[in-house]
Image (cartoon, rainbow, N blue to C red; front, side, top):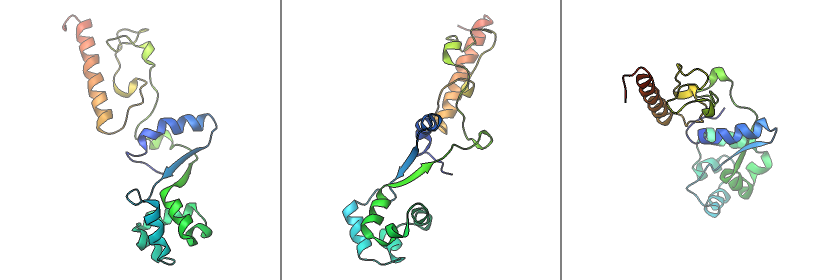
Length: 164
């Protein structure tokens, strides 16, 4: 699978496409610092396995290219350069919940009062991923959890008559 900061913001779109039964595809530029003509020129001057070095591509990226293209692409400098600049990776599914770093879902915001208490059960307060918000992972998710935790705590203190 693929993960990382470049992919996490794309997950909501990919999830929506997959749930709708649509094709979900990632497009990778394996050489973002090289323009297509320059990359093609480097590849044209090399043969076979030398092309990986000529393009300055690491082994994992080269293996990815080989796995998602055919011999005809790998043998043709123009096709190979185009593949490096726009490698298409079909997304078949998202990882299962037990492998997830972060999840989607939770209590809908229209079911929550301003103090983050549940409308149906005002004595219960929610924070972080208990709420239905598609938060970015890492520090942003942690900050969101801390901020909503503080917000909910202030709501609890106010409900107890101990806060402002």
